[in-house]
Length: 311
Image (cartoon, rainbow, N blue to C red; front, side, top):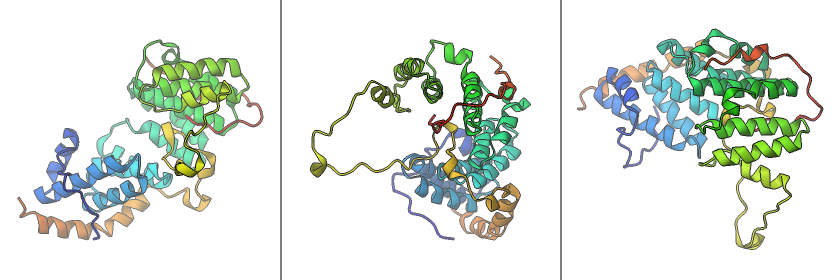
C-alpha cells in the first residue's frame, strides 16, 4: 500500500483525546501511523483538500473499522465535493457510534447530490431534536439552502428566522447564520434589509469565516484598487475551497449514474483492502431551545433569478 510523506514534526499526539482512545483498539505501531495520517487530514483539509483526501484514504485502508477514521474520510471527501462517498462514510461512522452529530452534513450531502427533498425530509426527522444548539443551527442552514435549491426563496427566508437569528449574543455560528439570511434577502430583492444583516454579520465575524465585509462594501459601491498594479503582484488564485457552511452549489451535482452509490458499495471495496490491514497489523504489532421542523415551512415559489446560496 502506498504511503504518503509525513512531516517530522507530526507525532500523532496532536489528535483529539477521544480519537486517540478509539485508536487504542489497534496495535501500537499501527495506531501511531493512523494518528499521523489523521493529523495530516486535519492540517490540510481547508487549504489543500485534495492532499487531505489522499491522507484520509491511507488512514481508511489502515483502519476502516475505526469510526473516527470513517468520519475523517467523510469530511475529506465532502471537502472535495465527493458527496456520494462522503455520505457513505458519514453513515458508516454514525452506524458505528449511534451519534447524530453528523446529521446536518449528511443532509447537505443529499443537497450536493441534487436531492434537496431528501435534505428537507432529514430536517424534519426526530434526529434534529437530539442535536445541540450548534447542530440545530447547521440544520437550519442546510434546510434553507435546500429551499433555495428548489426555488422556494421566501420559504428559505422564513426557515432562517429563529430565536438564534434574533439574539444579540454572538456564538461561533452567528456570523454564518446572519450572512445566510442577508444573502437570501438580497436574492429576494430586499436590499435594505440585506444590507442591515450583512452589517450584523460583519459585527459577529471575528475570524473572517464569511465574506460579509466584501458583500457590504459591494452594496455600498466601494471599489478596491490594487495599489501595486497588475504587473507587480501575482493574480490571486481562484477559490477552490470545499462547499462552505454546509451548502452545495447546483453545478457540483454528480452524474445521475453515481447518485445511488452508498456506504455498502464503498465498504465492499474496502473489504478487498482489509488483507493489507491485517498484514500491517502483524508487521507493526511488535513496534513498541428545540428547533421546529423546518420542512413544515410552507412552500412559496421564489422570485426569478435566485442567486446561488453562498452561506
